[in-house]
Image (cartoon, rainbow, N blue to C red; front, side):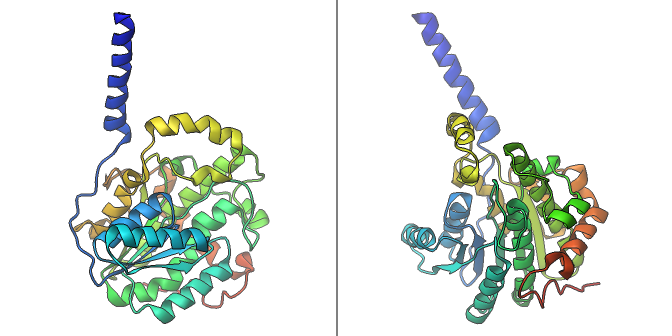
Length: 331
């Protein structure tokens, strides 16, 4: 009996060491206040997006929850207002799987909001399907929707400055690959939609996030807008809600034991959005609230430029309402 107790105690001790030493991660140490500032958080109704929005609201920011699901977002906005004591938390409709919706959101925002200080490209999906415009779901939502959103709001970001664009990528960008001929023929970076291909599509989209941030920083050098990509940690969220049921059930016990909760997962996002002194690191990649080395493909400036130019091509997009698409022309 005593041997079993020692074994149980050892397992508990090991779990605590692993969880707090490896999985729990660092905390954002910035004490910056945000009164008078405005922030957008895409996917701010759940998971790390909601945790990020709550912390920004606690610091006094006006927070726009840019979300697809109106009912869930309004509930989240109510929760954040109540917990933060900040009434300046509002919902605005945004479906990143529709380029028309991205344009509509930007148009509404620019008409109603006089400033923008922080844009957090947080929303993400993993699973099968296609966007309204025919792109693979992961590529269309995780990369292309945020790509267009950032461009349409960039002038407003520059008007206030200094301002920041923070894009939630993932460590899985290291497994990503960009097949330009496949992208041209299928509007996607994978050839099918099996569970394995859905996973690869997610990895590919996260590599796009890293490359987008790198190229955006190059184009904005010398301006008052800086940008960062990041790995939030391994988080227990609704990210895999579109994957198969058996995979969700398989992951659940491990996720409950080891994955970060949404508050923990929001820390590196908050670090990139708030930490003073990181402006010279624009375009770089962070994890665990610190600068990290990015995978080899994520450091490829030529690849980043090629991806930008490919997504800039109106013939590739072949979608509605794109007359002002990607007007950046900085030296």
